[in-house]
Image (cartoon, rainbow, N blue to C red; front, side):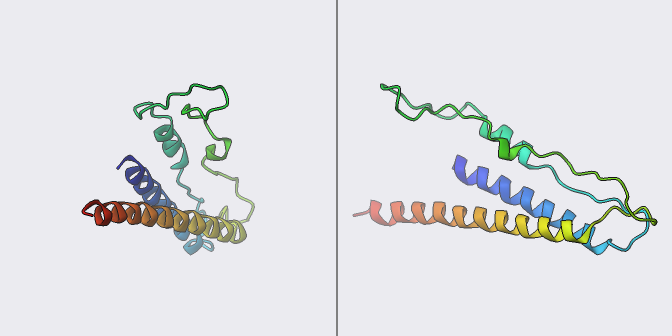
Length: 130
């Protein structure tokens, strides 16, 4: 269940980021509009560092450790660029479209992982009665 809750948190964050990026795109021509972004990956990182999970016992130095290391790919600051246009709007449509595509890939990956988890649970339930 912890994995499913973790994936749900990721989906919630990706959904909020999708709304922020869409709002940026919608306001690309609005004077004085400032780009907004959601920093949910740091919260996921904190959840990954939660030490409440069962740790693995290792009997050999070559065994995989259950220690969680902070991946550098989760480091992400909220983007806040200065205005580069005369109307003081700092939305760059090319950046927003790239972030939108990246967020869509991330969201779809999480959906696939969640579907896999549910399929595993279904298999266990189906085969458990045999």
